[in-house]
Image 1 (cartoon, rainbow, N blue to C red):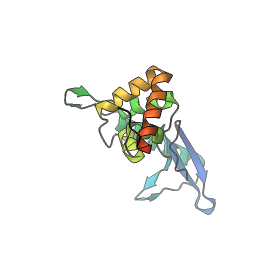
Image 2: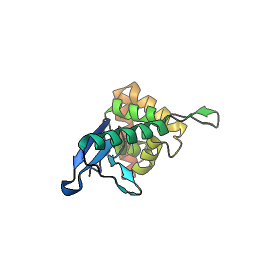
Image 3: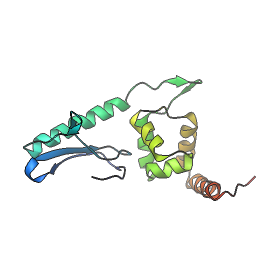
Image 4: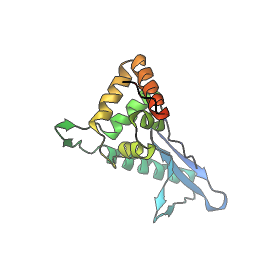
Length: 153
């Protein structure tokens, strides 16, 4: 099973020899997952059934992302879906964005999954990164320097 976040939406059936097929799904920014039933990987006799189950699971994930954006401290929050789309447009991985923002990749994945609120500062950083390649270079260079412990004043 892949451990790298996906850069696209997909559903597919994976053959598991004697057991049958499992349904796998993913969305941009998410690590591919298989359909679960009762805490275990669900198996299906036909690949079409595995794909259908994967499609339903993906729809559930997408619907969970589409919840209303809460307003905290006077700001409408960026949604996980919006962040995922921005990551795709930027052509970076979730881990790369997390590094620039200064958080563990698991937290950024939590933002995309809708498990955690996305701070307003992430919206500002993503907006600046999308605005120009120069801003992206500045952000990457500042991050590199900060990780080496060499801060500029």
